[in-house]
Image (cartoon, rainbow, N blue to C red; front, side, top):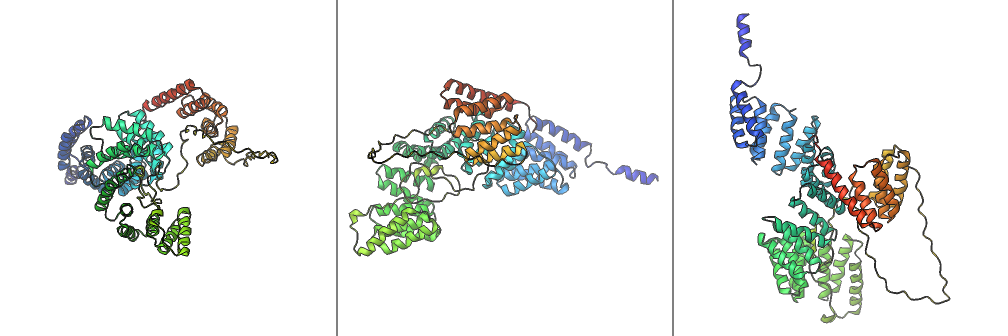
Length: 579
């Protein structure tokens, strides 16, 4: 019995001894004060003394993460989860390390494992949201970031990331609102200014984009080529050709072979009537990216302008070989054949373009013109050939996000081409946009006296049948109608939700927004007043009431509500929140 007792006493009850515990405690003191290099040394001593003890190894990994040594952090955390698969903190750390290493798919899985083990925090949801964003899974990113922001309102990067995800779904107004929040929380968050500028550009508000980009370029020590490229695109859209070319030149100083910026500057040079410079940039774009069909189509356009039609035709043929599903390539080569008087070949290419884009009316028109030429059986005089033979990429396309599909090769449209992305899902009320400018119509001819005037009365909106469900469920259905732009039906449905629960201030605010979109200023103001009376700490209600007052001509009241909205938001975000 004595021998057995001595054997039992010789087996350690814990995987650490006194020396390793002392080293671990010392490491934690260094780590808590941000002295991670010293902490790593003491954690390593604890690990060497007790290799099976996971705590110092896990803690060392987080100090490695803080110093950017991400591979070593991942090595430590892999060992920890191998020893204890239910260590949720280690799974979270793996997600952080994998995301830092660009392995975002694996990071999503690691964060998910952490959540499955019951660990939920804003940091976890924001981390997984950022990983989804990097993968281009925009709606999944929004879903996670929504949860992270609800748990903690003061994380400026979460607002910025959610704005980027919304921009990826072309929800530019919603994105701008999130970037505003991020900047309000951290006025020197220059990445948020840059992303907001991109969203403004995609929404066609180029002057606002320039204002943001001016701040970025003036304030950041190294603003980066993207800031200059975006500002160059905005200047191009506003026809400030010299400023546009200068900004593109600055962007190219940082990356001389950026094919997209080269094509954008070529578009600017074209508008400046400098075809030789335009050709030089397009030629460099092809050199930088020989398998870029848009660069080939663009250079082909320059060849045609110079009269080198066979070279232009060769470039556009190669573009088709690279991407046979690219509508622009078929249209551009059909254009080239038409320019060269080869009308039967032009018809075949335009027909291929129509197969890819059935709504391509321009190709259909050119098919008809080519068939007339074929019937006439005589060549068209060169002076009459004025079809476009230019680049499909305008300078404003710099604003585009991922998965852009080329449009017909028209020279420099006034607004950017929107990226092709999945349809957006319902989201919080978007920011009311300013009233559209009033168009001055030319005077209409007076009808002869014999023509009777018939008064046309627009049909009154028919109230949809009342939806079923709880007040909150009815409210969500109303918000979905708002998101789809069906404002009149949304008002009916939201009214049913308010009738069922008069204290549902979110439904009042949503109905206010729908009424704003229908320019029903007084009704919108009444809804916002009611929402604020129920919940004076609801920032969105002040924002919408500001818009309603502005619509009704009350500039002072609008400014007062805008200031109140910012104050309430900041008060909410500066309260202590659980992570």
